[in-house]
Length: 344
Image (cartoon, rainbow, N blue to C red; front, side, top):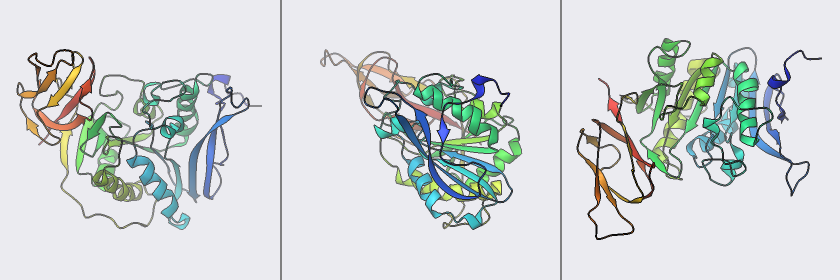
């Protein structure tokens, strides 16, 4: 009988054997007893590709259910890799928050929780808490590397780029830089990977670090659609990344020629711009614009009095616009976009 504390034993079961050699396609079964299905479960698709000895690489997408570049690229990858090209193990979960993915929502339709704001989760919590707990107690302890693919979802759109821990963060900063170089991203956004951009520390990256897993993530589009440039960057970058981890020996996909990478930091005050009340926001910027502190970011019109002068919203910092809101209908607290500060 296992001596592990009960709190460490997930109630999620798997149809794949993580120790088995070869290629397996299966599901993680999350128990979900509901009115329509007393003994029901939620099946989260998972693939395990394993051969010989080597590192374990965990690849996740769909942590938010309205972000699609990751799920599509990971679906393609799992079907294209020949197991003979692998030395080690690749675990692929294209839509980790599967309930949210099914309804194209950032948060789960079952418990309204954002999976990337609930780590470490709970074994006996809600559906989303159980998924976070499984990742933290089962998957991260067996992983050496994790790449988590994101986009802006329905409400935001990003200039595609890889988010990398600040220099010095992580178990091996030199290895992180080699992985970045192998991915050949068009942009690198350095950030405090133990926190969300809003300062929240209940994120996957924080718990990857606690489990000593080499962690990268990225934002590759948004707007509730597929950014073709971002998708191509993910598809081609993945091959270089997997080769650098040594889990993949040859390339099943044509690799892009190296491109000149732009480097930015997200760890600087004043990069976010917010609505302070409800209204209609008219932006005065586009993705990729270089802006200065104090310049006009846009105008917020009063929906109840369209004859009133709109509120002027200004940028609080210099930088490059790397993210914009996709809807002009806003309420107080909505992020209207944000900047990244270019590094030399």
